[in-house]
Amino acid sequence: MSKTELLKNLPAVDQVLRCEALDGLRSKCPRPQLVGWIRVAIDDCRKQILGGHDHVSESLLGAVVGRVQQLATADDGQAIKRVINATGVLLHTNLGRAPLADRAIERMSEAAAYANVELDLESGKRSKRGERVTRLLAELTGAEAALVVNNCAAATVLVLQAIARDREVIVSRGQLVEIGGGFRLPDVFRAAGVILREVGTTNRTYLHDYEHACCEQSGAIIRVHRSNFRQTGFVTEPSIDELVDAKRPADVPVIDDLGSGLIHDLSALGLHEPSVRDSVRSGADLTLFSGDKLFGGPQAGMIVGRKRWIDVLARHPLMRAMRVDKVTLAALEATTEIHLAGNAMSEIPLLRMLSVSADQIRQRCRAVLEKLPSVHGVNIEIVNTDSQVGGGSVPGVNIASHAIRITGTSTDELARKLRLGTPAVQSRVTEDGLLLDLRSVAESELDSLAIGLNEALTYHG
Ligand SMILES: *Cc1c(COP(=O)(O)O)cnc(C)c1O
Image 1 (cartoon, rainbow, N blue to C red):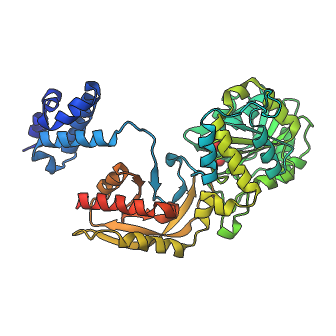
Image 2: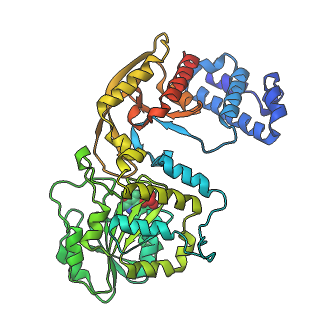
């Protein structure tokens, strides 16, 4: 059949709806939902025909019904579910960035019921939300005070707005970045109601550029960490220590937007990122970082620094719109405790995954490989690969790892089956086949991964 004939023969919604094979679904789910799936299924088949996939021609009705059943299985009503991350990207924004420590998970579930977020159990009086966690954060980072908001983007908006509204914020042209998801610094400045005062050039900005820009109109100096790209070659910019020492009016604070939030030195692992403690120690007035990047906790925006400025932020009306919920507070408190106790490398999954040797990962690959079926034509082997930190941290740094590589079958199709399995598995699709980098897979997930792979491969083969 020609494409035109096939398209003409696509079944109508009503015809699919009456189909005997869908009796079960018809009695189980609301009609509008079923009709929705049918429309999507017909549309998918149309796309397949247009894309020249000839296998749809066998039975168009059968193909559409099959697709409806797939959609129904995938849509079990739970939108957010556990996913095994076999991409090797440890902070995968699409997968919710940092996986939480067990202790943080337990505390979140405890806080999910009624919890004393704003109640002092001793006096029975109202207490300040997040009192303990901000105290711990200040202790951990060496800062005078701390504040927590929804994420680092919110922290930036709050700080700019509360401290420099209608005034100029001085920033290097080399730091006017887009962080991701359309979060662009110049837009953020505009949204926060501050005036962007660019200084220097893309590659070179000197201390005197900042000093010359300081005037009565100045509200703040901000340094934005280039989290997601690197600049090399003929480049220079003042360090945070130098910025702090810049000749500036006393009411013009230096704000350090770090993003990644490194607490412990990871240079032994080849990861060089500015640390929160160094930023505070340098004398930055406010240091901002994310809770769910290298800190390894829940989504949150941490602001640490001088009490004088933290108090201004805490009193600002926007603060009420950006405060975090009890569950996040509970997870953050537990994660901060782990950092303070010096147990981060063993208790925080992100840091644990970073420190596993390539050899250990190879052994994991072998253990999974042994449990996989042999499927005709499908080739499964262990290959060298590189993992990445991701999430806009440490760009360009590759961490040696190993992956299970599957070739000899449609990679996209297999990746899709893995995603739709239980548990869902996110793999890495490359030109050289499907890769499962086990650096981002926990030891405890290996059995489930093997089961998921078995199903996807057998059903596939
Ligand atoms: C990631 C990042 C942000 C945004 O952090 P979120 O917690 O995702 O909002 C802001 N600034 C820098 C420098 C970053 O790297």
